[in-house]
Length: 255
Image (tube, rainbow, N blue to C red; front, side, top):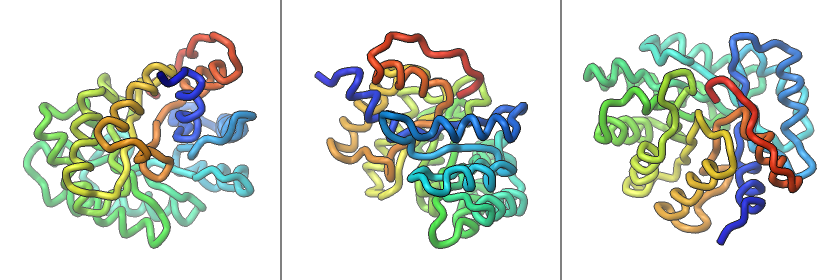
């Protein structure tokens, strides 16, 4: 049986340490980046607003931590040009990864073309080395078929990851949505990754998602190139477990 410390160690290396609060400032981002490298190892990435990418990149320039930022966030609108412009800005400022919100309202209205074009255009904006994570906002999807089709559409148009949620709507990551998305990755033979986000606040929850990925995708599939957690508050819980303490997760908004 896997111990909590083993799960915490594994989850730490897969964490996109996130701060997407309206009150974020340079001070907030400096504090975030200072937490990205711990005595137990480093997180996979920090995820911030686009305006903080250059600062985060400078603060972590000598560290093995990716810089991610959000585009078309959090509303998931249909303005392709704006989403592309923001994605380009992120990469040009030193970002490695773009987390773009899928235009889920348009998609659910049947406007599949806009959804496909936005994902494809943002992937192109990432250039040769930038990676695109597509946030489906599964909590707003009415059924399993919608989640599956949105996943398939995103993968077909260049998504490097499919991600559950912005953390800004009432329902964030759920095991049910994760199962559908992971099965879609498996069934399509895609080499893309999966990122549950929102509501992941403790080691037990992280462990459940890891166990699900191991079951569906096979032992050894999960690594930072294929699996991330989007979270802010969970880091304290992971460190507490790794330090041998029994501290509760801190309260945090959204993520």
